[in-house]
Length: 411
Image 1 (cartoon, rainbow, N blue to C red):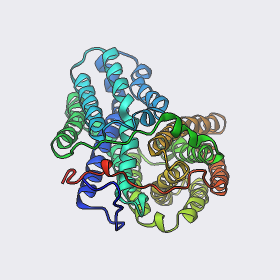
Image 2 (image 1 turned 90 degrees about the vertical axis):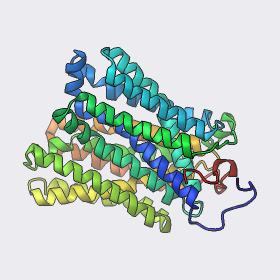
Image 3 (image 1 turned 60 degrees about the vertical axis):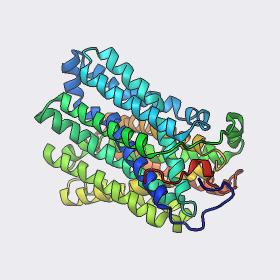
């Protein structure tokens, strides 16, 4: 183990750190795919368990509600638990959740298993962001962007994969594939990751970072920014079909392209964000405002609309890093709490944005969803500017704890 008094001499992570970040990225991929994949097979779930389609939708909604409720405080409360134990417990729960989904004939049992797994979702994901940031102490956004790649890949591949496999092979094959991804991550963690004791930070000490306005402004800014993105994304397929005239196969292709562009955005943000954090924080909302405005104007020009959607996918990769940085730098002494608040802001923003954009659709039609997005982007820009102006009551840099950065992890 490294000495706790020895600071890293370079911004480049060691081989063990890089391997751990790669494993965390894969683990997050399996978790997100399990969470989001069922969205692509809601009708099949309804048929299999003999429930209505809206009832089957609770396999997504209940999961998200549990994550949103637990994310602000559970990662902070478990900050002192050995990181390896957290990883093993989370991946075990997700593996078992998929086993229940595979063999259960009871919808209640399926829902309970998913909600139980969701309890540790924010703990694992918040921990992944924390450890990834510590792996690149000179530029935490580099490691964090890699974990975001796992998040994006889980969202991009989970839904279309579940839909395709269920259609052509069966529900069981799709569910088993998600369980297999969790099981592989579990086995690698068990075999290759040593104990990673973590220094416990009292919950009261962590909550003290809420004293000033910086953290609350950061959470509100990212909730607005994520709400702008996913409020419209929730209706993007309908927009592309009705406003742009794409058939459903083309809509699927554009949505898949958006997801791949999001991964590209994560990679680019990891490379460039650290060189101009303030610039990107202030530039991303106006840039997205301009792109969404152009999308409204060019909605009926299919090549232009598709190109703008891909550009927005890249921008979303930057927006994730912006939001995480705004929150994390306002609470450096409480990284698990900060990352939990990031996840909660993301989920709350998505729910709020979807409802807000949906209200515009109800009154003015599909294209009007963009009005909701544009208004939320204005709010996000104002809140981001206020957050940057507020500074932080917690300016100390993050110094990785040696007990959290093992030698030979996942080597």
